[in-house]
Image 1 (cartoon, rainbow over the protein chains, first blue to last red):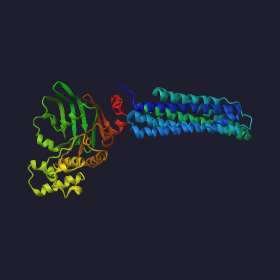
Image 2: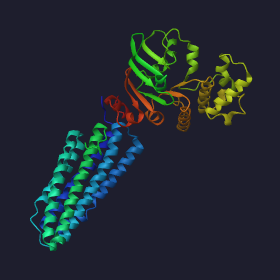
Image 3: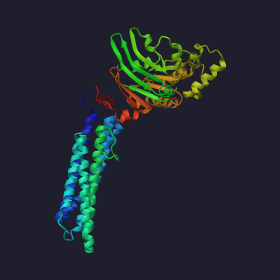
Length: 219
Length: 255
């Protein structure tokens, strides 16, 4: 006999805020890599100047603190509020990393592209998919879906390693390429960090649903 | 002896009927000494009935049938051979509303010892001081021991009732909603007292107030319709209960 509680309505509001953060995170990753592909300063600046993510994170934190203070959540309710706060933190960090990518793209505008971009856009798609996946898992409380993010993280790590090897190779052969290669190396690193944050969110979602901490235990 | 260190109370397949009503169903519970064990659950779930089994208070009700086993320090207490006076001396009960006797403060605390045959004024004086000190009433009341206990505030009365139990040196204190007639500040002070008392006594508390169970207990059981649905570490019960029924109750979804 479940009934709609005031708390359920507040949970829905919180879910909505997290969903908006998640969609924004995907949009920022996409735009940052687009700005790199197209050498487009306007797109890059739309990422570096974004303020919506920070505002949303503040709104989530405020909502969570109010819910703890006024509703004294316990058990699965408590896990929901704590998880929402940590997920918001991870999404905000993803936004910051997208901004870092956009800054690297701006640095690279003055140079011709070192090589055609193949693996970095692939990593970007993986990163967006990972965020979409864990968000879906959170909203629909699906632990199996949350666990799928592990595979994506492995794929991301492999791509990062391939990019790393290729760029080191190019720089070793011609030192003049370093100013163009290092930002790409950093971008691969930023995308890999984004995937780590998505994995964190996946772990949070498993804790939310199953009450089990799987962080630092390899899933 | 090793076993008795791990549990002061152990029930095994405990069933209790009020006439045809099955009030406790196959309850298996182990209570560890020198900690506070909380029992929570909706009205009528059997938590107070279970509490009253431990000092055989249900014997006073007509038509009660009990089966199974309840051991207190490894001794079966459901047996007819048990001496109820001694049992209730070792297992005291604190009730919802403080129930001081219409006697002086001193006589309230000394009452238990007197009925157990203690006549020495010296022994009684010492016991009264020790018990009132334990419940943090001594400094307030040491010059008012001849006042009627009924003149005390509700919180003081509840403390006095606890002191009255401590005077006969029990091992286990049963508390049935001990704060439900007290205001929040008095409640907090009784909870702090419980926290002090657990260093020397074992406490089982029945409470409707889930936050109270969360605050004071180290282990906690959730009861529903006569069953002990879940029992475990309080931290676990209030963060990640194993049974969905526990989660539904704690989060207020059950109803």
